[in-house]
Length: 106
Length: 106
DNA sequence: ACGCTATACATCGTAACACGAAGTATTATC
DNA sequence: GATAATACTTCGTGTTACGATGTATAGCGT
Image (tube, chains in turn brown, red, yellow, blue):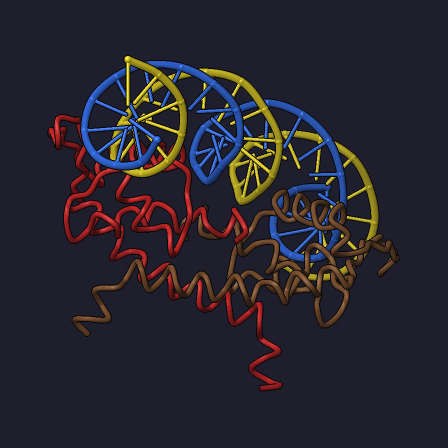
């Protein structure tokens, strides 16, 4: 899939991946993989960006003698997910513009 | 709307804007405006990129004593629009991942 | 004649961003 | 004891959208 098309979806996808329960880097990548593949360097960049934006918080915990960073979504992160619904409406409108002939010809 | 979300749509939108008939910069911006706003500098960057990718051709013509550059979509440009249908399927899949709770709770 | 707005295209610099490459370190498997 | 899987980090690079700025003509009001 076109890189550019992914861009706007990535942040929201990561937030969605930690929405229901706290998760960690490696698991987020695996959970997202069937829908959207992203590299580790990309994910950790995104996680830091979302942390700076206070859309998630980080907690380090030990798991099988190894350290893991668990990411927890915040109120602002949940707000971002809500806002995405509005973005989606615009995307649908743009989609119609792009494929407008289809509406006429079937 | 989030800049990042626009990125993948921009090129395809411009191609869609010249699909049915040749158009020129100023008109493309006006046609797209209700769906997706973009600045002139952005559009001309995109038009050059699409020309390099051979997705459109350019022709200069005089209109009311002023020069206009008319852009014409090529076979490759039309192919790109077709490919967008496949991209769209992936986007829908990602959308479901992001909003998956909605499918369970209504 | 003069100013203003709309039309029309072009260039430059910048900041955001995804990603490959490479590195560090532990646990499990063969 | 070698290889793969897990887990996180840093660096450099190329793509890109956009604001700022510039050039130039047409039309309209005063």
